[in-house]
Amino acid sequence: MKTRYLALACAMSIATGSAAGAVYKWVDERGVTQYGDVVPEKYAEKSKKADVINTNPTSLDQSAAQRRRAQDQREVDRLEATPKSSSIKNDNKTAGNASDCQRQWDIYASSTACFSRYRLPNGNLRSGASNCPEVPAPTCRR
View 1 (cartoon, rainbow, N blue to C red):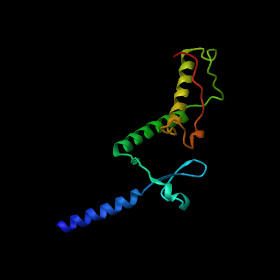
View 2 (cartoon, one colour):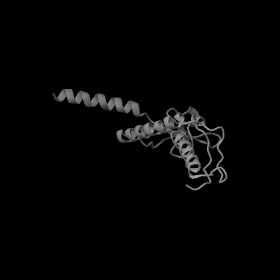
View 3 (cartoon, rainbow, N blue to C red):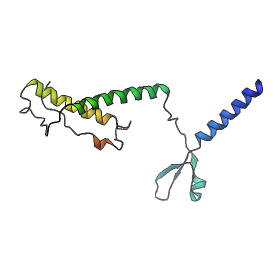
View 4 (cartoon, rainbow, N blue to C red):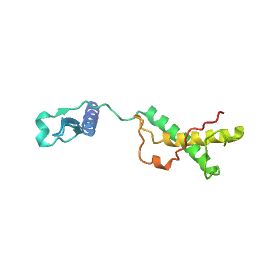
Protein backbone atom coordinates (compact mmCIF):
# COMPACT_ATOMS: atom_id res chain seq x y z
CA MET A 1 0.00 0.00 0.00
CA LYS A 2 2.83 2.41 0.88
CA THR A 3 4.50 1.67 -2.47
CA ARG A 4 1.33 2.67 -4.29
CA TYR A 5 1.18 6.04 -2.51
CA LEU A 6 4.89 6.62 -3.06
CA ALA A 7 4.56 5.85 -6.78
CA LEU A 8 1.55 8.17 -7.04
CA ALA A 9 3.39 10.97 -5.23
CA CYS A 10 6.43 10.59 -7.50
CA ALA A 11 4.28 10.61 -10.62
CA MET A 12 2.45 13.75 -9.46
CA SER A 13 5.68 15.58 -8.63
CA ILE A 14 7.13 14.75 -12.04
CA ALA A 15 3.94 15.84 -13.81
CA THR A 16 3.67 19.14 -11.97
CA GLY A 17 7.37 19.88 -12.29
CA SER A 18 7.40 19.47 -16.05
CA ALA A 19 4.19 21.47 -16.53
CA ALA A 20 5.47 24.40 -14.49
CA GLY A 21 8.63 25.01 -16.54
CA ALA A 22 11.18 27.67 -15.73
CA VAL A 23 10.91 31.22 -17.03
CA TYR A 24 14.03 33.29 -17.56
CA LYS A 25 14.62 37.02 -17.81
CA TRP A 26 17.34 38.81 -19.78
CA VAL A 27 18.03 42.18 -21.39
CA ASP A 28 18.72 42.24 -25.13
CA GLU A 29 21.15 44.49 -27.03
CA ARG A 30 18.51 47.25 -27.33
CA GLY A 31 18.02 47.32 -23.56
CA VAL A 32 14.60 45.63 -23.73
CA THR A 33 13.80 43.13 -20.97
CA GLN A 34 12.80 39.78 -22.45
CA TYR A 35 11.18 36.73 -20.84
CA GLY A 36 11.10 33.16 -22.08
CA ASP A 37 11.62 29.52 -21.29
CA VAL A 38 14.66 29.37 -23.59
CA VAL A 39 17.46 31.94 -23.36
CA PRO A 40 19.45 32.72 -26.51
CA GLU A 41 23.07 31.65 -26.08
CA LYS A 42 24.48 35.17 -26.26
CA TYR A 43 22.38 36.20 -23.22
CA ALA A 44 22.83 32.99 -21.20
CA GLU A 45 25.48 34.44 -18.85
CA LYS A 46 23.39 37.47 -17.92
CA SER A 47 20.01 35.73 -17.68
CA LYS A 48 18.24 35.11 -14.38
CA LYS A 49 15.44 32.80 -13.41
CA ALA A 50 12.31 34.95 -13.16
CA ASP A 51 9.86 34.83 -10.30
CA VAL A 52 6.56 33.80 -11.84
CA ILE A 53 3.24 34.14 -10.08
CA ASN A 54 0.81 31.28 -10.54
CA THR A 55 -1.72 32.57 -13.06
CA ASN A 56 -3.88 29.49 -13.10
CA PRO A 57 -7.39 30.52 -12.06
CA THR A 58 -8.89 28.85 -9.03
CA SER A 59 -12.20 27.04 -9.24
CA LEU A 60 -13.82 30.09 -7.60
CA ASP A 61 -12.30 32.37 -10.27
CA GLN A 62 -13.54 30.05 -13.00
CA SER A 63 -17.08 29.88 -11.65
CA ALA A 64 -17.20 33.68 -11.21
CA ALA A 65 -16.02 34.12 -14.80
CA GLN A 66 -18.67 31.69 -16.03
CA ARG A 67 -21.36 33.63 -14.14
CA ARG A 68 -20.16 36.93 -15.63
CA ARG A 69 -20.02 35.38 -19.10
CA ALA A 70 -23.58 34.04 -18.75
CA GLN A 71 -24.81 37.42 -17.50
CA ASP A 72 -23.10 39.24 -20.37
CA GLN A 73 -24.52 36.75 -22.87
CA ARG A 74 -28.05 37.33 -21.53
CA GLU A 75 -27.51 41.08 -21.96
CA VAL A 76 -26.24 40.59 -25.52
CA ASP A 77 -29.19 38.34 -26.34
CA ARG A 78 -31.59 40.92 -24.92
CA LEU A 79 -29.99 43.69 -26.96
CA GLU A 80 -30.00 41.68 -30.15
CA ALA A 81 -33.71 41.06 -29.66
CA THR A 82 -34.48 44.80 -29.43
CA PRO A 83 -34.88 46.75 -32.70
CA LYS A 84 -31.83 48.83 -33.58
CA SER A 85 -32.05 52.52 -34.31
CA SER A 86 -30.17 53.87 -37.32
CA SER A 87 -28.54 56.53 -35.18
CA ILE A 88 -28.67 57.45 -31.55
CA LYS A 89 -27.94 61.00 -30.50
CA ASN A 90 -27.07 61.50 -26.90
CA ASP A 91 -28.11 65.06 -26.34
CA ASN A 92 -30.82 66.76 -24.36
CA LYS A 93 -32.83 67.60 -27.50
CA THR A 94 -33.26 63.93 -28.38
CA ALA A 95 -34.31 63.02 -24.88
CA GLY A 96 -37.75 64.51 -25.25
CA ASN A 97 -39.19 62.30 -22.57
CA ALA A 98 -38.03 59.96 -19.85
CA SER A 99 -38.41 56.83 -21.97
CA ASP A 100 -36.06 58.22 -24.67
CA CYS A 101 -33.49 59.01 -22.02
CA GLN A 102 -33.88 55.60 -20.38
CA ARG A 103 -33.46 53.93 -23.79
CA GLN A 104 -30.22 55.85 -24.37
CA TRP A 105 -28.93 54.70 -20.98
CA ASP A 106 -29.97 51.11 -21.72
CA ILE A 107 -28.08 51.16 -25.02
CA TYR A 108 -25.05 52.69 -23.31
CA ALA A 109 -25.18 50.03 -20.56
CA SER A 110 -25.34 47.24 -23.11
CA SER A 111 -22.36 48.68 -24.96
CA THR A 112 -20.44 48.81 -21.70
CA ALA A 113 -21.43 45.21 -20.90
CA CYS A 114 -20.25 44.09 -24.32
CA PHE A 115 -16.84 45.73 -23.84
CA SER A 116 -16.49 44.28 -20.32
CA ARG A 117 -16.20 40.78 -21.78
CA TYR A 118 -13.04 41.89 -23.61
CA ARG A 119 -11.52 44.07 -20.88
CA LEU A 120 -8.20 42.90 -19.46
CA PRO A 121 -7.18 43.52 -15.83
CA ASN A 122 -4.90 46.38 -16.96
CA GLY A 123 -7.81 48.16 -18.70
CA ASN A 124 -6.82 47.29 -22.26
CA LEU A 125 -9.11 45.36 -24.59
CA ARG A 126 -8.63 41.88 -26.02
CA SER A 127 -9.18 41.21 -29.69
CA GLY A 128 -12.84 40.82 -30.54
CA ALA A 129 -13.90 44.06 -28.85
CA SER A 130 -14.45 45.56 -32.31
CA ASN A 131 -17.72 43.61 -32.33
CA CYS A 132 -19.04 45.93 -29.62
CA PRO A 133 -20.79 49.15 -30.57
CA GLU A 134 -19.13 52.30 -29.24
CA VAL A 135 -21.84 54.39 -27.65
CA PRO A 136 -21.04 57.66 -25.85
CA ALA A 137 -22.53 58.22 -22.41
CA PRO A 138 -25.91 59.96 -22.61
CA THR A 139 -26.02 63.56 -21.49
CA CYS A 140 -29.66 63.37 -20.41
CA ARG A 141 -30.51 62.66 -16.79
CA ARG A 142 -32.44 59.61 -15.80
